[in-house]
Image (cartoon, rainbow, N blue to C red):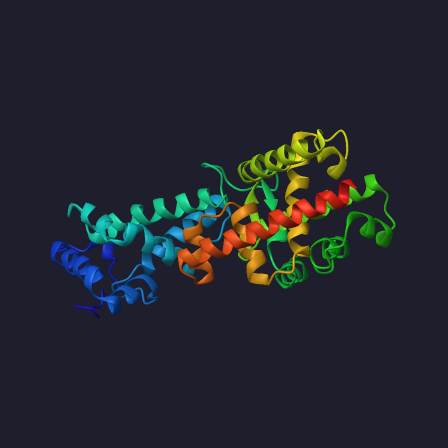
Length: 327
């Protein structure tokens, strides 16, 4: 049964499906080898999620312009069935259809929820240049160089984007290097980033460097701005945000500048690439610890402990920075 070949027939349309479903469920609950083949197998003629995986990934790509990798898909579906350390989700299968016909909407709903939670999509809307933001600062400089070289190489925006995300130069340094004034820099930066977002949306690669604009930024700013402003107000009697980010800024501009500040400041910490990535993903991007632990290949307890220590170091550093800045 384990190596059963479907002879080209869709496993969602099997006629005598109840015994087949019982056997699959039993093996998922008891056989680790079968589990690996079921979730990670690629042969569409075998008993695995390869067929429905291809269909769902293609549907999402067409509707939302987001490419979900097979590895990400496999992990999401595995966790959806292995809920809270048990296979209790499998017990909801009612045998009114084939196991794969039942599994398809379960898998798609799990993937869609993950995409919304991670701000890859917002609600039911498709991604556009206008409703997304770049998350390049949460990536390594090497990853940023790879993205820019491949998608923007040879364009007039290449030099500015490289200075921003690979060399991590300040605004003043870039203005001096490119001979731009403040207004010219602002316009050039927006145009360059819009073109990069458009290229990312058209590409099947690097979709992890895009985030939903409204939801993600609101999550970031509400915590950091409030905490930092409150702490500094207690110390000085005034909010530091205008001094740090500039005067006459809108709430949205403050939010965006806060995100940039956090990534720039974390880059100044003497952390490893992994530590910086963990802190940024948890503190800035608000990524779920269970998903991040799986991504970095560490136990959840280890991740929580590591993040707590990094956060304490950040707290001490930001206070030291403010004292030096205010003085």
